Length: 275
Image (cartoon, rainbow, N blue to C red):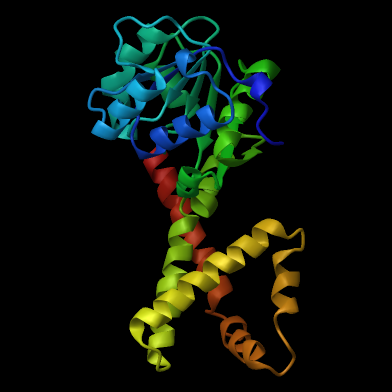
């Protein structure tokens, strides 16, 4: 489901306008959110964010803002306790909270924000900064359908949104798509190093590795075919790709096992941070 401007809220407060919060804000404006309906609260806004708010007519750090339709929590997770009192003061009985605080459960938010009612917990990832993100989201029982559609319109402005049946799956989402961009970047590093070891100049190997992964990613994005089918399509029997895949896929400690172990380790760490 793509973002629908008709479901955007009339009023929104963004708490925390760092890299992710700022990227989300730009996405909302691109899909039709009225800048006059947005308030940004950040005790230490960057010069770029201060200028952006001034140019767009967005209120920055006003005193006693009115309770909004939606309040988005995008601070660093460790700042939740510090920000709790000011967040509580912004909440109304019909305010929807959307939290992107890693490791902070809906229960954590309810315990620190007694005025909170409807809550969406979301886990976006870094490509949201270029509108190509992947977000997993879960709701509590107070979220009604209108509010879920508002949350979807906001989150989908930065990429795809997957609604989870339970919040328990957030840690697995964190391990796959939240941390996943780092795995891909490491793949590029490894491919470039392998190219250099095969005789290519280092800079050329890195350019080829980067272009190969971004091109393959764009092909995945544009194609409806399963990844396995795309892999098979580029693999001629007995050819060079088949020779390489024989190495990657035959070893019991190869890529599949390593990726399972990596995702499991990330999931365990997310559970530890949440606890």
